[in-house]
Image 1 (cartoon, one colour):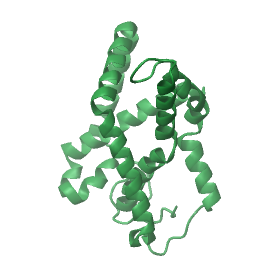
Image 2 (cartoon, one colour):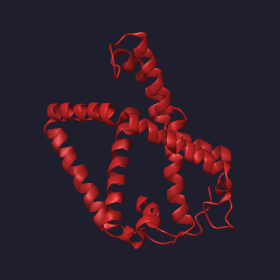
Image 3 (cartoon, one colour):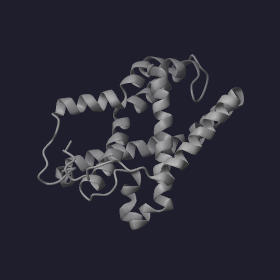
Length: 215
């Protein structure tokens, strides 16, 4: 919520390794899906089922830990640290900021999935038979997991890491900057570029789903 006075001005430069890696992956993936739609759909469904059955518990645990972490951070002394220079002032009011977060974050998908997701899980639950009371319970549990406070915990965790290192330490506004305490200047090498590349891929896939439902 701070004005970007600490960021350098001028033209935005393209990080060639990150761009070409992410663009090549997305292009190849798109060509394969278009060329083999049925096989791709079956493979993606199998991958989704494997992930849900194998690491679903880990996914839910991590989302809970993210939420706990950001709440504890906000209520502790660390919550008073500005995500900007000490002299910066908020550019937007809290109401405007909250509106932008909601509109850019979950508005399209929430409009669609808040109704369809519990009904889908009622008919095809992750575990057990469809059309049962247990299936309805699973549907509501997943609904609150995806669209309740847990999702905002993930948003806040990533946003906090990006903003802190960008506006307090003048590092690039990129995912790799959050790894600076762990790997130092190597964020400007293959490891950091790979992190940014996979971050772009995940973002594009997520935006693609949102735009597909919203357009």
